[in-house]
Length: 253
Image (cartoon, rainbow, N blue to C red; front, side, top):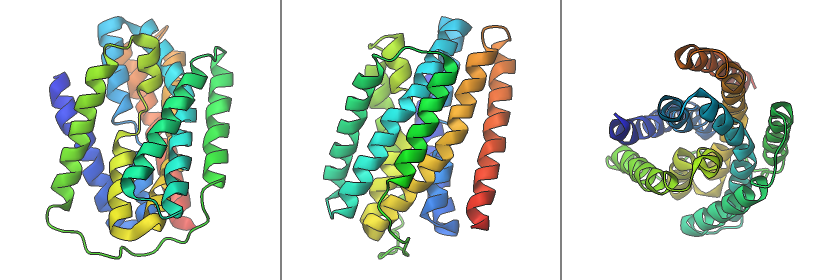
């Protein structure tokens, strides 16, 4: 079951985000990538294997992980804007994610504070992105584009979860939002449309992650007193509602 998740859900998200980006633009691709289809199932397995209280604590750590993810987006976007290669952008982004994780590991606070810090980080990061206008892709996607994206996402999930399982519950919660789908989407967008396309993806991602914060916050509140099935159902419904509102706002603009 777990292996099936690793091999299917994240690649499916990447494919859906890619198709959405081709239809509505790279910003919408980032919006789709922010949906909790990677970290969400990780929290589900935490609840099933370690118990609801464990999963609730991990969900709060995941909320703080939005700070690290915001740093990843900033580092990748500015490096891409400066004309860096996709590899250098990934290295810069992952390095800032790691530094952010080391920083938030020292933070202990109430759920309300965690949500406030996460939302503030997402807002400030989005406002601090390079002011680039989204442009059409410079090169047409090849027939191998979607399969390569899906395979890349699956490999990243397999590698990261293999090492994350040995790191313990707290660090596992902080690493749950590791930029798997966003890295794949940003790299492919940059290779096809340049730095502007990568920035547009990350702009949408940072906006969409507000719904992910809502998803985790509901889990923190519901899991200690409600069943896992009920808690995750309500959290998913809230995330879908927030994501739909964000998508509507983006299309209206």
